[in-house]
Image (cartoon, rainbow, N blue to C red; front, side, top):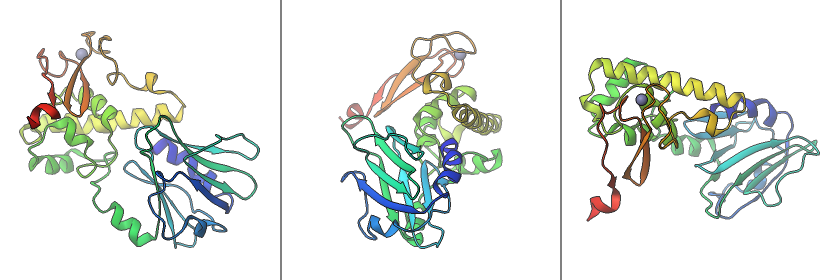
Length: 269
Ligand SMILES: [Zn+2]
């Protein structure tokens, strides 16, 4: 997300908006103020809060908020560049450039909100501190009162903002911690390893994304079932926890133990 934000920052602020929309009915989450309120205004740039991108207007009156979820993609097309026929959302700028949101698959989960700055503030108030740049001391304080397991906890945007399920896999592997470890039971040294891993892994991801690399080159653990661990060559294993699939190395992370599935359906039984 941070790589996207950096790329978009200068592009979206170069020209005023000529036309806002169309937007897919499932993608646009707000109707007041109407999208047309953006027309004629200029965006100040792109900001990020966790996994959300924010585009405030120069006059400070409106904020366009975009959440891509897992399948949404945001592209900036220069004047004359061909775009998709039916984008989930589009902003056309004076001079001919466009910002388009597309989403693969039939499910529309990505969202676009047009908000006043006050409403945007309220929308973001439940987010935890930014994961990138979080130091060990701050992380230790956050973990102390948590009874949850590390993988679901890291993914929870109210705990820390900016880590998705794939990066939770990468981070826990780098920290040599079990995805099922209980947050409050980490030693001081383990918390330090986790804080360092959050920083190095998110920075690594940011750098690779900026170089334009795709998922298969960026992830070393996520979605690599059966492939050799890049540290110890043990095949990467997979476990289901609630509604998520977690990838881990049984040698590096769980002392050789194979984790058992804990699906939500079974927990509810
Ligand atoms: Zn390993």
